[in-house]
Image (cartoon, rainbow, N blue to C red; front, top):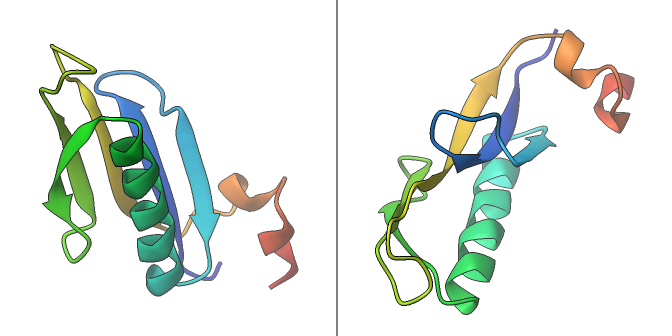
Length: 89
């Protein structure tokens, strides 16, 4: 199985609300950037870097007790690609 990347996001300790799959790390970084930009436009605050591939929600006017994250995860599992267009690699 070819290496691929997931952008995961959601509440710590729960199943992710976001699970986007990308061919390359560069694409995954662009996907992560998109999620963070949209969250910030809605008033949420996140700290982190694209280089590290991890962002943690901070306290903001929108959320007093932040508990969300976004991250890039490297994956080699074939099962996660079964229902996606990425199986055609």
